[in-house]
Length: 558
Image (cartoon, rainbow, N blue to C red; front, side):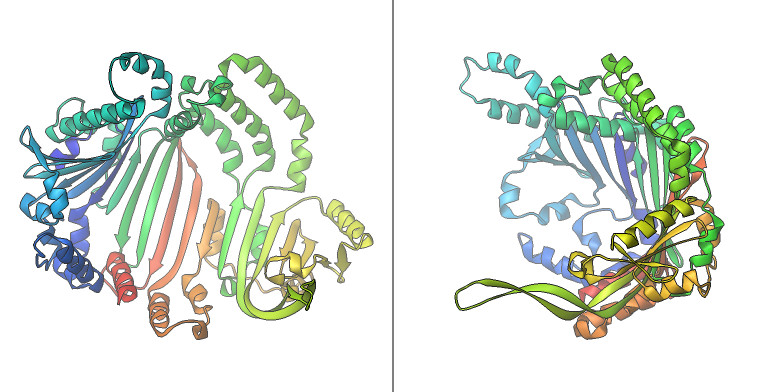
């Protein structure tokens, strides 16, 4: 039946999300799920809200087949868009028993199907399958055809709003009936891109047929029916950006939950992107990364010279698709921009290597501005202090223009913007104008421009006292275009327990024991795809990470 449900999704669907019930119940059996406090509370609430106050003891009592796949898909025409859900039923009577008396009164039977229609929502079901679809009219379509529709309404006692509502509800009903009966279009299963994206080991999956086209269509919906469309003919756009299919899969392994993403790109976009994306961060950055003293970090490595050379061309292709009649003018703008930009000089000033580290959270005394009023209600500004938990962070930016930056720093000292601290500089920004009242320090060393909130750290860097320890992260950062890393265990431990209630303390302690660290990484471009991966590493106290996450939710629900 899971296969037959999937086969009902039309090939024109632009997005499909599937939730693999078989895989989820394999990871967490139904009997185990029913034991969770949040599951019991949910069942109790549904029992109270049902018509006859049923006693629901298991999620199986809801009438859904939790061992089957469930699907969502998005479909769009020029006049209407649908957000449709398909769920297998084991007992339609159990499902109907969850409804309120008012909802039951609105149910009608047509062509052997149970139907309930509301404003912009239609629900249809039979003995085996439930479909509900939310729909939205295409504003540009009704704007374009308003005159034609108005002429048809001349002799009818109906407003244009009522006509649009009647038409969209009629179309939605036809859509729902065609899908649930398997009539009309070819199945999504005939789509090679969709078929190749499926992974039976994934707990959930996402597939987008054409990400770039989807963005273009959304822009058309936003701008196609208003004054902007007179300047930019959005209706002529195909894929505006060059992004094609996107596939994402979610997995719950032992000790980690992970999500992989593949984004297919056009040949033009691949050619441009490879030139600036597939670069490696300067190894000098690893001399200033100490994993033991870092709560989180974010790295980025781009080839600035290639980016500056390719970016105008990328934008020209975008606008060439959007405004094809202006190709000559756009080509001239691109050529002029290339003449004005000295890619070599800019890439020496900013190489494209960036490393941000969140070093600490600690309590500090900060100043802030307050106001007092005298007896005559005259306002007087006062400066006060208070203790706050504030972050310590460091930003490192690659630059080969040490002499130029040092010259600018000396000029800043002369203008009293900076304070020379013998090897590094304190930036003179009034504390009240800086978040958390932080001080900011800067230095230039080994082709890296440093900004940090820690005077101790900047002093250690310029005086060669900084102890490096990149550990496994050196290999991770070097192999990726960008990385966002969070040490959840350390970060949670920085939350002061004195600020937490007993319940919050219990939850935070459980989270600290359960969640280790997490990262999101963008890999190098391979073939015609940009690959990325998100990992949340957990304790090995459970058979799989899904059980651990449900335990975490349960701890919060208690």
